[in-house]
Length: 249
Image 1 (cartoon, rainbow, N blue to C red):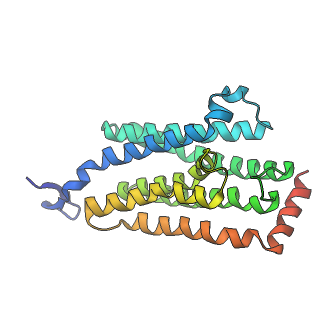
Image 2 (tube, rainbow, N blue to C red):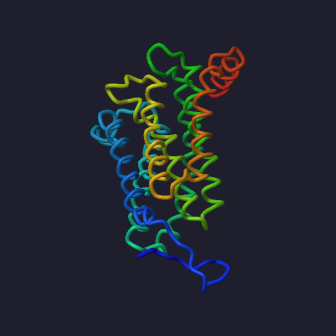
Image 3 (cartoon, one colour):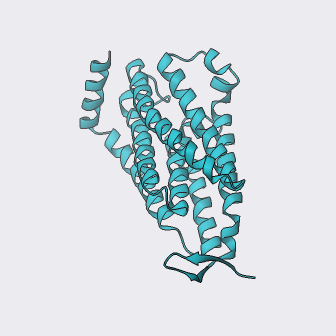
């Protein structure tokens, strides 16, 4: 039997819903759990298994950043679970807190990146001034997509896809810390974007087309990841990073 929903303009005319859409709750809940596992594996040695706030992190800013990031991932799991359980009312109330948390994460992300720049921290073989562009652009993608997700919160299909792609932009930091990646920026981005591939495959299976939110949000993420490498190697970027470095000291 075909599943139907009422047509917005005429309740008497039901609009068909593709059978695959019935698995939305399973797919998005599973994606949230996979992201949770990805983040835990990446940060377990230096943060979660090291005692969280007792972990030997270099500054209070990094501690706060880690706590906010962890809260966001846990909130993502909670929100997808609430929708799966049919508690959309609680989901919507928590959504306001989630938006405020996302705003806090953007601020803490910039502060944490600047803190690392001042300390000269970064992957082996990469100077801190070049590496500064990586977390900044991750925060840029996250913040931009969260704003659009909040704008389209009345459109569930678009909203949840924008939230997932925004979170994918942050998982690169966790994947980069996997032993098999060894802080290789390009490899970490490639592996984290497997989540995006999952979304594309699910869209094609469930609706027979790539959802526009998956398409343009994913394209935006990949575009930023590609252009930041050559930009980060320019003299202009190094001058900017040096100016920030001097200003923040």
